[in-house]
Amino acid sequence: MSGQQMDPKNVPKIGVVYGAVIDSASGTPIAYASIAIINARSSTIMTGGITNEDGEFNIKEIPLGRHKIVVEYIGYKKQELGPFTFLPFGDNQTEYNLETISLSQTTLQMAGVDVEGERPLFVQTAEKRIFNVEKNSLSTGGNAIDALRQVPGIEVDPDDNVSLRGSSKVNLMIDGKPSSIAGGDVKSLLQSIPSANIADIEVMTNPGAKYDPEGMAGIINIVLKENKFAGLNGNVNTGGDSQGGTNLSGQVNYRTTSFNSFINLGMNERKRISSGNSLRTMDFATFSNSLDQVSESNSGGPNLFVKTGFEYFIDPSQSLAISTTISNGNRTSDGTTSTIDSGPGDRKFIRTTSG
Image (cartoon, rainbow, N blue to C red; front, side, top):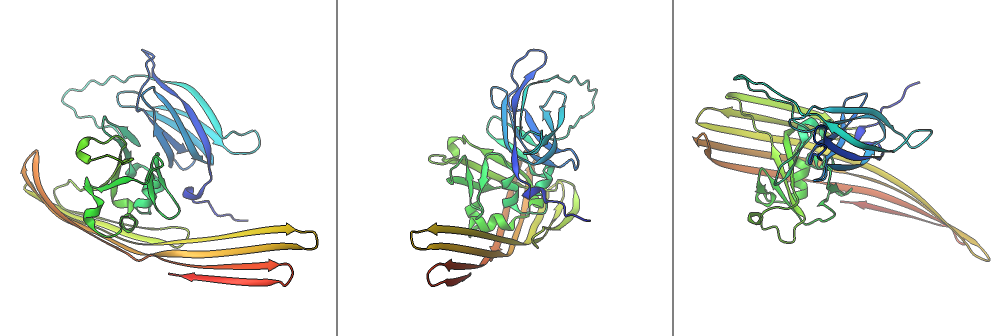
């Protein structure tokens, strides 16, 4: 007997956890603490969030399964809770009230030694919320659209349209520059950027006046990886998914004390297979009628993304940079809908779409 393991991206999202985080010594709320939901078996980060200004959090759409909850904040000891089981049957729960979680401050004594800690999944600054894409394995093997789906507060519908806080009026940026600079369709651009080439996703829901935010829900800035090691460096990533999609991405970087040159590229082909069935029955005084509808669709296509650039270091704090971004995509969709009308004079209709 054998079974197939469910892709974590496709696991039903049924769980909810909520509570508050405080300082153990003073009892004051800790705002912007990071809450990560980690699968107990695979150690995969499933989702997460941050506390608000009152130290409270409410994380929804947690995937089915058995998960640990890790609470972190800079300058405090990490707190690990659970594991908790999120199942909608038996004696299990899908909602947990964690009440109050206390974090203790850490004391570090450094004598000329630089201490670097592991970056949390979320970081909150005065201006923006930063999501660490490199630390979220659910984004691995996909593209920028898949990475955006993992960021709390960002919604991506089945047609890959991006919205923030329920509004589609979002200013999307790549490395701090408007995505429109790259030309072409923004959706195709996002589909062409491999998630393996993304370092962070920054979300600004209250951007300053310099961004001309009037009428916008906020700004989403996708920060691509940059190799900061001297000399010639590079990497290659490849992957696939359960529906036959494939991707290949890589970076090549040459850096000296005076300049840095790079090329960042990716190729992927997405495939999405879906099907549906509906049956409607209507009873009348003299006859009955039923409408049985079956639909199947297959969409996808290749995407190409290339970014190349050159940066000259004027001094340690200033540089002059020029870069070019090229993206190209060709997405097609084929579908068939079969309808059987059972009643007086049985009829069958078949509709085929392509393009």
